[in-house]
Image (cartoon, rainbow, N blue to C red; front, side, top):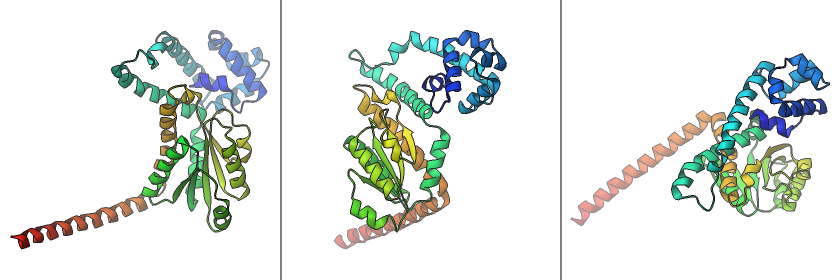
Length: 295
C-alpha cells in the first residue's frame, strides 16, 4: 500500500520525507491540491513531487491522489473490523480456517511493500548465472531453507543448505565455481549470520540477506537485501507467519528459475517420466510372468 510506503520512507531524500509527512498528516487538504501547491506547502518543488511519484511506482500525481483516496477509505473500513482479523484465545477452529487465508494475503502484500519486483528480478538474474545456490540459516530457519534447496534440486539446479560455515570448502571451491548465498536472520542481528555474510563476501560469494528489522550490521556485507515484514514477527503467530513468508519469497525464486530455463527443465521432466513409464511397464510384465510360473 502507498500509505505504508510513505510511512516507511525507505530511500527517501529529506525533501521527499517532508512531502510524505505532509500527505499523511493532511490527507483531505492533499486531495484538493495540485502538484505545484503541494510543493509550495512543503517548501519543496514540483520536481520533488514528481520524483516521489516515481519512487512510489505510480505514473503521476493524479494517480497518487486517486490511489491514496481509496486506501484511506479502505483503512477506515478496516479499522472498524480489525479485531475480526486476529486469532486469540477465543478463536474457534472455524475462525482459524476463515482467518488464516486473509492473514496470509495481508502478509504477502507486506512482503511486496518491503521489496520491489526489481529487487527480485536482479537477484533472479544473478541466480541464473551461478553454478550453485547456497542457503545459510540456524534452527527453524535452517529447516525452512533446506526445503528450498530441495525444490531447486528438483529443477536440476544445485542448491545446498547449511547451518554453519565450512570455510575450507568455500576457499577450495569459490575459485572454481560461481556461488550465490542467501543468509537469513529473522531478527537481522544474529551474530552468526553477520559473521557468515562477512566471510562469504570476503571470499567473493554473491550474498543476499533475508533479514528482519535490526539489520544495520549485516547490510554492510550483502549485495542485495530482502526485508522480512514486521507482521511476520507477531508474538505467538511468528512460527506460522515466518514459514509462510519465507515460502512465498523463496517460491518466487524457484518459479523464476523454472521460467528462466523452462524448456530444458521440461525436457528433463519428460525423460524422467518416460523412463519411469518403461520401468513400471517392465515391472508389470515381470509380475505377470511370476504369477504364471506359480500356477
